[in-house]
Image 1 (spheres, rainbow, N blue to C red):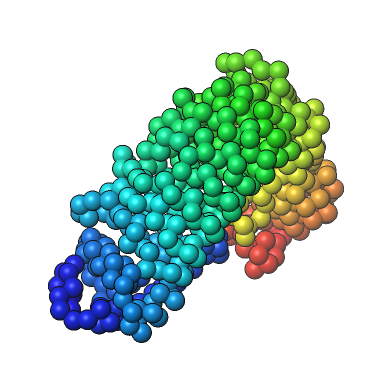
Image 2: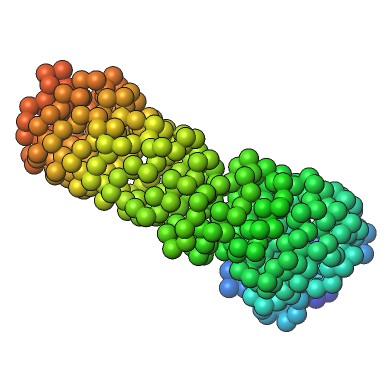
Length: 474
């Protein structure tokens, strides 16, 4: 029986009878990642604050499984094909990967350790292993990785933190297709030159890294480089032939000069906080840009991005979209907040992308409270289903909406100066125009009056687009 974290008396078979294998404790993760690991659960779990007790019990089970031969042990070994384990500071020492070697059917493993990881090369003693992830949080280390190259079936490997200095231990992993390394100190990629890598993810310190091994990778199809990109790292990447580059910069400090040094890959997906105009650049090579915000100066820099096809911005602080009009490849545009627009007389011809946070709602373009005086080319944005012009108090004409053929609902509340609304007759899909006592005050075209809605507007747009209500006249 269990006394706290210790098994006292009883056989191994009785111990194994207290454990059950749950192959998919988080089913929703399996849909996203396709490889959410399973868990070993004890049939009588204690409260959450006893995580260290369950951890010690799990280690006891793993250690005994290495040599046990009874029917319940055999059953558990055959069941456990994916597994995640956690270690907390009370363990008192690093997690020993050798404890897993009794799991002969294990194909996927994830170790989260707050105490470090030792004997990492024991992964090679798991004959069925194809995917492995090792997290060593804080200043803890991943130790004894030499010998892991004997994992002949390993297809993907994730090494997070762990004090790694180079990747020499990985040389010889002849089936490794995907590698992710997050380092908390300068890292040399030496050791991966001969690997058949197709996908590589790196999150490195800003300076002091040696990326020259990248130039030797012949099968690499995508590089996901996270964090601040230095000019020296960009110059190395520029010497590589990589079809897809993804650059999510969560620090927000990447210099545009470093971006300009990148090669013309087939796809360069750049994710940054903003573009700074502190450095003059002649050319920006990205094909996709995701920014937290862009000012007028940042938007003007995009005039140097002739390959840009997709632009997503959370908040546009610019006064117009003129710098985007002459981008020859721009096809897709998305912004969530735009309160500074004064004119939309120059708008690129592009599809306005839906908000991924609201997959079931209408595709909304929100220009609420912007100091707009003219929207003459707003109709160049295709795919908009709901247009929010609330409180655009300086707007006098809707001329420019022509071409918004998918527009179903239009919110004109608090627009007291609107006098020209004839463009509404050119919107074939329009079903409802929302107004209130503060505007518009001028009459609508006769064909539009049946679509004007004044009452019960709370949640109206969502309900109408779902087909739950119909527009009703005044």
